[in-house]
Length: 183
Length: 216
Image (cartoon, rainbow over all chains, first blue to last red):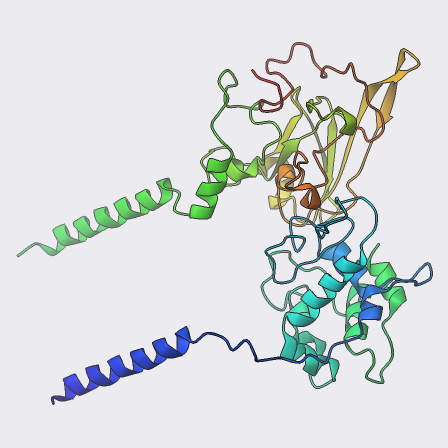
């Protein structure tokens, strides 16, 4: 076999192997466990005036109907002033009522499942919050069509980063900063 | 053997032709579908400032074509929420837009409710998103049979994150989209005059959009 033929054969074999690898279906039994920050502090229900949960900040800053308030988004945010969750017995419309428990749960799932492994590492203080797209994009550390949504150290940053580490012995979510950021 | 200068000239022609074709064709299937979904022009309503009230203007006027005139923000203001069958465009409404740098400019709707912002209307390449918007006007209000002019100035509850077309979010509410639209841009939220016929009886185009009972 000539050297040229040998190279071509090896290349074809490599292509075949990579094609098979690329076409493998995901294993439905694979489970990625997420050690995530607490839901109750994300939802922020039953907080006194002047305090708010993390979801309210995301609803206000990110969840407008022309941005993350769209069903096709990986980070998909529901809320009273944006996209509403379609529930069988409710006809939620933007601007009416309040953000529902179902919507808060959907927001929480969307946020923690965006990068599950990194979310776990950030929550367990193994990585800085800036490792997450949730923080990188609005800080413009990475391309973000919505531009710079908050800055390091401001109320929105303090709210979200304090929640990310909540329950790990470094304090709870800064609900006052959340309320300020949601105004 | 072809002369090098001739080959070079031919290559230039081919490249220019290819570039021209790409520029004149809409090669983005998503954009093409969005334009097609708007449907054809309505007979009797010429292309211009009065056409396609209530549609997402920047689908065609956003720089990707097919319209040549480019807008940065544009939309339609309608009368009232209880008067949405059919919706009536309202003229003379001041649309005040504040951008991310705090620059504020005002624009006025024409008699079908349309307004638009062109690139030169805002300095330094603005407006810069996110935007805050307030609309304001004085409208007649039924008051025990006597119409009392009422000044209204509703503001958007949330900001506009990135789209320049009001109608990308503000759509006529149906059973299919109620969960993802706050409804048309309405001047009045509480006042509703059932006899309201539009702001200008001499408007060259019916302020009720075609498709909602209106026409040319």
